[in-house]
Image 1 (cartoon, helix red, strand yellow):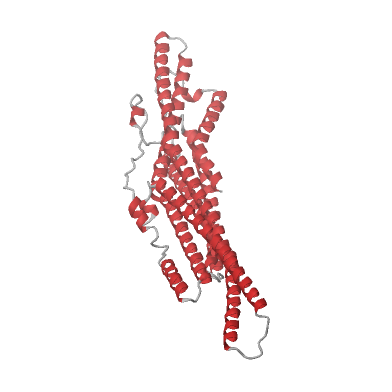
Image 2 (cartoon, rainbow, N blue to C red):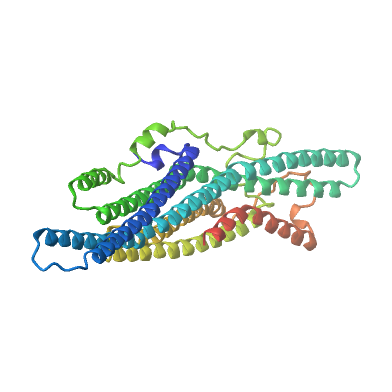
Length: 443
């Protein structure tokens, strides 16, 4: 039972929970402020009473009076009680109340971080699995129309015997663009499929578990604050002791590990089976030369595949280097927190570690996002390497078979080759732009 496994679709409930807890902490803070003020005023009142009694009792008796001795003892103990109450008020102000103020800021930061990361990964999820794929599919359909149109114009040119080379060149260029876009779509689809699985199986659950961990840490810290509050304000009279026993009992019942069990039961969301992201086969209805989920290797794409592979390998290496760096930071921060926790003298000192623990959780979230990127790049690299390796040393097959006396496609002039290579490079940039952007924000 946990946030990651049971609250994937309960975002609004989690936000309401955090808002409610922040209001509760503000109420507790207001209560403690008033308690400090009240105790100080009470101590001052007791001291004023004792001072007044001392003035009125200045006249010394010429005999030993047991009543006077008892009364003097009462006054002395009352004055001592005044000092104790004043000390307690100062301890309450510098201890639990100060820690609670820090904790409220930390909790606000936890909420801000959670909302920010959730929006980021949700937006990235929508971008990768929806926006980018729809954009590619729209371009895909348009290019298919252009290819079919170019073929028709080529047939007309052949039939008329006019400008056949020009028509063939247009047809070839349109086909090249389509095949390159097809490869982009296959790679983007692969990345989107993996991104979706990572999002629902790892990324989102990790974020929710991270939130639960910090929520429980906050509960643990609040328990320490209330425990220290109880110790400071506890007195020895039977009536007050009974009151504080009730407080102590209620505080002892706080268990960070089971704090959210009832909340989870109330707001548990039903498991939703996410639709698999698959190749849109409708894109191939008007073109028989392309295959779903297959990288196209031919005389029009062989060069671009090499560039794609090199680019993906570079991005994978960069991601892995960043990942190692972040994992090292996680290890170092975990060790630092462990060492710092051993030096905590008071129960409420755990609040001093909350910001570090939150930083650790944010680092872990960054590591997970980098692992997601690493997996996507690795999958795309494998897809490209497989196609490149299985065709190593082979001559790329031509895409379009023209009449036997037509000149070879490879006879295009040097200027056309440069133009095609530039087109390839610009197309590749569209594939890797999204992962690079995410890596930049994570670092």
